[in-house]
Every structure is written in structure tokens, then in C-alpha cells.
Image (cartoon, rainbow, N blue to C red; front, side, top):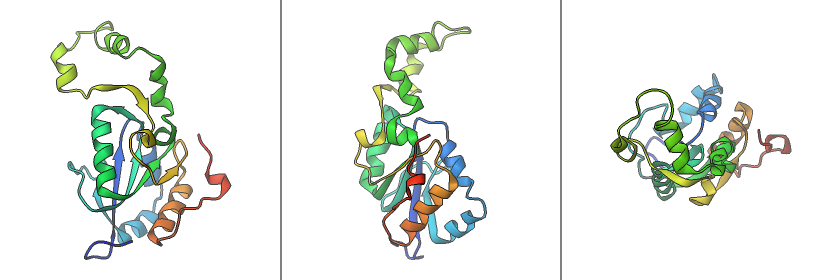
Length: 184
């Protein structure tokens, strides 16, 4: 699976509604990150602070649930521009903690958080202009775009991430043993 002149896999990671724990777990690969970086070009990631999702990505790890219009827009860009999309962690796979807001009235929740709490409320123009608009219901990634691989865990432990990355870099299917297919 190499598409660059350097014979490296073009790898992206994206962070939607979640806690960043999946990215932290990815960084917990420790010295194995040196091996990974030798085999991939990181073309988009909150870790690398690249602003535009590029064309021609081989593999994208998507952490977090789709919570707002920016998440949905980026999810579609990720799908259009990536050969393999991985729902990375329980929030991307099931909606997990961010989907707890699905039981609440969205408008009442926004009102409670931004206008009824302590302190000065923001101007109403800020909500729709500078803050992304919440979608009516938090969705796991596969309910927004087709997903190729589900990598559960909250967060997935580094061994699970490593097993998936090694299989992908070898061009093999990601077949995790049963103990690596658990949630939480």
C-alpha cells in the first residue's frame, strides 16, 4: 500500500467529538513510533497541525463521534480522499460518551451552557458564526460515512493500535484476536 514517490503510506488522523485519548494512545506506541514514521508520511493530523485534509490518503484513523456540522463535513472529505477509513476508538465506533447528549434537548442544552450559567453570556452571533453548529444527534462515524475498519477501545490500547498498523502496512487484513475486540 504505497502511493508516494518515497514509497511511504500516506497516513492521516482526524479528531472529532472525543477526548483525544485515542491520539494519546497512538503516541503511547513509544519507540515503535520511530518505526511507523519510517514507513508513513503523516499528511494530516491534529498532532501535526495540518489545516487542510489532502487528496490521495491511504489510511485515515478517525477518533471521536460526529457531533457538529464541521465533523460531518470533514467526515465526507475523509471518505472521498482516503482509501481506508478506520473508526478509531469507541466514540467513533458507537458514539460512546459524546452520544450521552442525545437524551437532551439540544437547544435547551446550549441555552443552559452558554446563557444560563455563571458569567457573561457570549453574543448570540458567536454561536452560529465562530462555533460549529451541533447536529441534532451525535452519530458514530459509520452512520455518516462508510467505514472500512472498526478499532474499538476507550481508548484502544497501544498493542491493539500496533496490531492494526502492522497489518495495514503489510497490506494484510486487520484481523484482531478476540481479546483486542472489546469496548471500553
